[in-house]
Length: 254
Ligand code: PGA
Image (cartoon, rainbow, N blue to C red):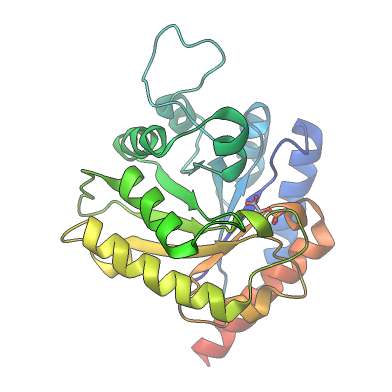
């Protein structure tokens, strides 16, 4: 399976989110082989977008969550609040949250536990900046975030490999480099989560994915999907990314 996640960031309000969600559903219409699609609007638009994607092929994701269930945490949102809104996935540890809001691996770890216990699928973002040793850096992030975690039978986790230098820059990783990092992440996650089955873990690529390069990533078996930022708020571009996923899936089914 391939999973395409649209991270709309703080780029659209409720009205635009609804229009985008409608456009995504339209782009999927009539296709036989569909990727899993998750749209992640800002929190304030979740309720409205839910009405559009309910009973459709697309799932609803959030861009962040807090780990506590209730209490005096001004401005925060809990996993149960998201679940009540029909959210099924949540992006955690995005590099913008790490850089701008001081999110640590430990905080990401707590969020993963909270998300899983509310029945949400965590999308854990990792990735090095241009000055880091990529494997070492990503391994440290994953060890910190997955420490002590045990996935239950039906639980799943998505890891998005997003090199920081590729996010929003127009310079994507080379697919071959992503493939080798994905293989590394896959084996590391298997070590960190003993007993986990391959089907419980998906590794996605993110960072300057667009309509022109999506296919080159998606045709790789190591790439279980894509996390798309900038190109996900442009319907024509996002439509091409969905098309690329459909064509990979159709070729496999043939
Ligand atoms: P980008 O963002 O596609 O705009 O590079 C990806 C992300 O931030 O998840």
